[in-house]
Every structure is written in C-alpha cells, then in structure tokens.
Length: 492
Image 1 (cartoon, rainbow, N blue to C red):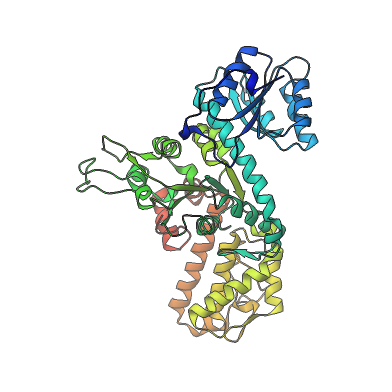
Image 2 (cartoon, rainbow, N blue to C red; image 1 turned 180 degrees about the vertical axis):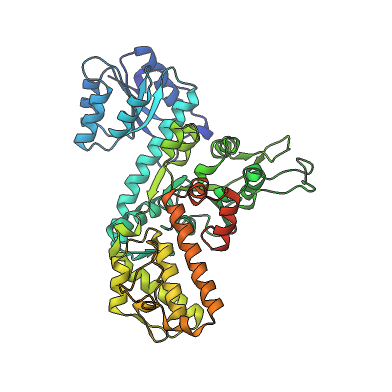
C-alpha cells in the first residue's frame, strides 16, 4: 500500500480542474498493475486529489476499514480478492464510498452486474482519455458528497408537507424533497425520473427556486414536442441564412436561460446530433448556433427529466452513454400516485382550493363518498389526472361540497367510475341534462378523446409514435388531436 507522498511530487493542480467542495477528493486506487496504479495516481494528484493505492482487494478491504474515501477505482480482475468481491464487501458492510470499476474485458453483462452491486461507473482499459478518468472520479465524489449533505436535511423535511408546488407528506415524497433540497444549492445536473403526470417540471422549478439562480430565468423545454429538424435551432439558436427560412439571427433557449436553469423534459427524445451538442454544453459550457463558425459561452444549470428507461435507450443505440452519466449525477425518482395514496386527500383539497378560487365558486369540502372514490382509484395519469378530475368536479358542482356525481364519469380506466348501475342515465351530473343535446354530446366527445388519447400514451410509456400506431393514426394527426384535447401541451 502507498499514499500520495510515495508516488512522487505532483505538479500544482490546474485551478480549472480542481474538484468542487470544501476539501480535496479522497481516492483509493486498487489494481495489481504497478504501472497503472502509478499513472492514475499521478493523474489524480495533479488535479489536487488525495490518493492511496492498494495492490489487491484484500489490501483494499483493510484500507477501507480504517480510512474514509470518497471514491475507489477498482480493477475487476485481481488475484486473491477481485473487484466483484470487493464490491460485495463494500455493499454488505455499508461503507460509504462510490466505486468505479476498471477492466480490460468490458462487456455489457459484466457492466450490468457491477452496477447492480452498487458500482457508480464502469471504465474499460485502456482508457479513452485522461479526462474520462478524472471526470468519472469527480462526478462520483460529487454524488457521494451530495448524498451525505442531504442526510442532514431529514429533521427539516419531517415538518415539510410540500416543496414548491409539490404537495404530499408520504415517505416517498419526503425522499423527493430530501434529494431536491440537497441538490438545489449546488450547480450539479439532476435527472428527474417518473411517469407522466407525476410532477417532474414542478420538481425542476422547485430546485431552481431553492438555488442561487432563483432570480434568473427558468426555461422549460419539452424535447419531444420540437420537430426533429428544428431541435438544434430551438435549443442552440441559428444565424441568418443558416437554412431556408432563417431570415434573421435568433438566439436559442440555452441563451434565453443564460444565468438561470433550463429544464429539458423528455430528454431521451433528443436526436443524436443534439445529444452531442448538449454534451458539449455540460462539459465546456459552450454552444454553437446552427450555421455559426464560432462557439458562445453560456452559464446554464441543466435539469433533465424522462419517463423512459434511458439504460434501455443506451443499449438500443438511441441515447449516448457519456451524456447519460453527465445528466445522471443526482437522480430523483417521483413515485406514481398509486404508490402514495395517503397523499390523495391533501392533494384533492389543494386542487379544490386552487380551482374553486379560479372559478370563483364557494366550494369548501369534498363529501366522504367522493373522497372514497378518489382514494380507491388507481390514477394511471397520476397527479395531473387527479387535478383534472377535481377541476371537472368544480365546474359541475351545484353545492358547497364535491360529490361523486360531480366527478368525471367516463367508463375509461383513466377517470373515476363513480356509479355502478344499470341505468345509463345514472352517474351523469344533473347539470348535463340542462344543456342542449349538441353541446352535451360535444362535451362527452371531448371527455372521450382526452381519456382515450391519455390511455394510449400511458400504455406507450409516453412514446407518441407508439401511441399513434396503437390508435391507428399517423403521428402528426395523433399529436394534433392530443394537443386539442390538452393531453399534450401545445407548447414545449
């Protein structure tokens, strides 16, 4: 075993490469190849990190049991105790260190196994570049410290019922608040995961609101809503004459968000070239407008979101692995509403106050039988669907309390079924029968379109093309109808 002073006198670390935080990053390098240990140690020492080396897994276990590290770089194939055994020891012992596995025999099966054992990243030898190693260690250390910092917020979060516009006090939501509060004051990228309607944009806005950039712009972008041939222009801008129709130079959304936060919803839908340009922004803080010869510097904090499995997208060659690791420094997973049903009452009253005030209606409560309907429903459309149901009920409520008859009555699984009767007229609000036939029929048609299109999108996990195929419509027609029904936002 050797420490940093035994490796040689390193050159002074370049300021721009210095790791973030109040202290240097502590790294353990475990490899049975002396040359590799020495070279990697010098590389990290030059970046101002503290380095300790070990020649095999058994020696590393002794070191880990006696010292604290932020990151361990571990070779997979070593005599005595190998990398997988070391990973298992760290996991079962509860040691608080991020593990990066190194191997000359990289394959998908081994990478998946190491990640399941708790590895933060997987590096194939020989390394593609020195920067690959340095960035991996820096990101792992940053993630390790963020997790530690958020643990200090538990007492504060026990008293919190909401975070920004998010509402809920369940254990799953307290975990969301804990992670969001931990990452908010930093400049770290965050990846928000969750089904459609769970509140990913609200979480991103809350992170921005609690950050040092709170007074700067927050720009939300729905990547799936931008036509593929316009994505680069929308995000990074273009110069005059860059393409047909570009009659003037136009700044992109990254420049509009300069100094603030940009929220990239459905980031998995970005086309390949836009992914490359986004990676450049994250690595170097530079953008290059379409048709421009020079790059421009931007200061933007990126928060991304997706409701698809990016790991699967990577395997299919549809999403860059290096971009995924840049975005996935801190992952915040939003639970579906069916997994936090204890939050339904407080959410329902939150939306009741909101929409009753907006409609100028004196509706103060929700009847017990109506609340039972809400609590017993599965809500595949999540919080957004619940809000739509409450808004619908406010419109049709004739008294000062919401009743089951006021709730949406379509038999689709996407909205509550509030009546179980053989009489087809039962369950419809009385006010519906006061409307002319044509208007009542139009409202029923609109309700059907919204429910049907939402169901197809839910079954397709938000994939518009797949939902359109299932519905028997071409993609453009599906998007047009879905926008009209309010299922897909009309703006990105």
